[in-house]
Length: 82
Image 1 (cartoon, helix red, strand yellow):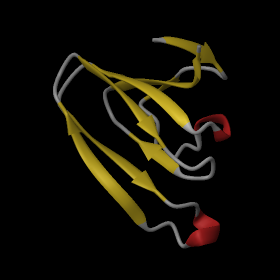
Image 2 (cartoon, helix red, strand yellow; image 1 turned 120 degrees about the vertical axis):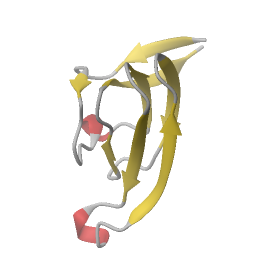
Image 3 (cartoon, helix red, strand yellow; image 1 turned 60 degrees about the horizontal axis):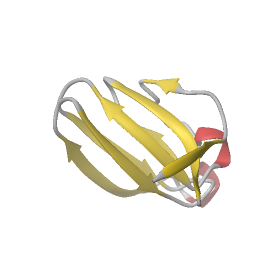
Image 4 (cartoon, one colour; image 1 turned 180 degrees about the vertical axis):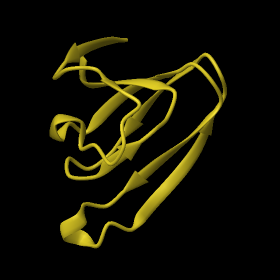
């Protein structure tokens, strides 16, 4: 699969909207817990969490105003490119 880059890579994001993108490519260097939250305007409640094993990549789909927190990671806002 090819990705279209939509913004700057964020290292160790904390409550980051990732440029308002709906798809985030995540690479982690150590086992981490990724947390996805609703926007502060919507109460900031946790939508879900995911444990990601060390040296792995995942693609996370989210609403544009949801935030990502993921220590020990490099997260890039992307879109699918066909």
